[in-house]
Image (tube, rainbow, N blue to C red; front, side, top):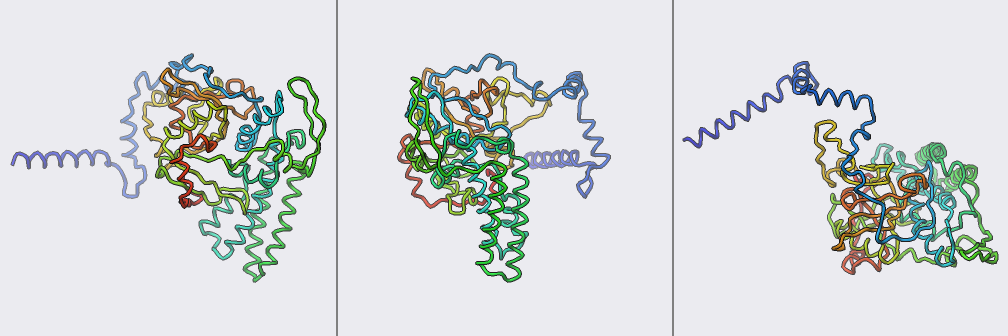
Length: 465
């Protein structure tokens, strides 16, 4: 009987508590006067809160939240650092993926030819990337022509007809088809450095063309007619790109001065012959790994439409626990092999110091509220995702050999961060790293076997992507 009374009393208290929470709440879910009064009364306007109001309302929140306890605790020294060839600068563009991928390849050319510095032309590949993406969009519109305009796939296509962003596999397909050229063979233009307006106008043109293709299909036009129109549309995109970026070279002459001031003889190349003879890198040997705790580990995944060519390869990756990734990453650095790395760079970044640390900014103390989502929850709620690519080029370890921080070569110019680099704590790596591209010789055989699986195909609107 006593136990029964305890249950009844507990239930009654729970009801009262629930009632105290919802009192004043209207049936339509709006904020009532009573609810607002209850909210206002719950806030204590003590001396600390008044001080925070004065401080935060008159200053940048990030500066006030900077964790001074970290000052001087994270240095920029690394026991193992891959030699680089100068910091690149993507400027006001979303081409970090191209800069990062090419930054991984260029040290090999520098070493091969004993060069002080070397850089591939990002603008050259960007031209072909944009043309191929335009074709992918138009061809996808033709394929989905029977679907309604508000079908989720069609809607996604019109929302994302083209962009300047990308991932590793897009660079691989471009290089296999169009080759590579040195920077001097196709320099940057204003619009490759500043892509916003060019991209906006190209998107507008493609959306217009997509609607026309659907209209002609509805009028009964045949497949051959649509394909001919698509070719004419691509010719217009080509013209826009040529005017904005310059025309990519079909052949060029390259010579260089090495570290010993020796001038090489001038040799004529095509972009494909330059890739094969000068770069000489087998890009199929590199594997994309991912840490996405919202999906099952040790599985192969493929993202639909995450490519830049209609006949290209979708982004395909092996999903692994973060500790598995770190083992391969460390071994790669120790062998002087840099890696393509992408992450949520905006989280906890101290731009002035060039440091990424999980506890760099203490927003909880500023506002008196908690932020408790883990990595999986941040992904599923769209609070976190991969936003930037950089080259992983160094690691610092404890006496026990455990990584304590990592070095990233950025593409924001040498005036940003620490002389163009970012130092990342191992804890930040855990929380905000998403993708790594590693040469397969540093990946365990048990992981490589996952590549034989049939990939799980994910839609392009997946939370992570």
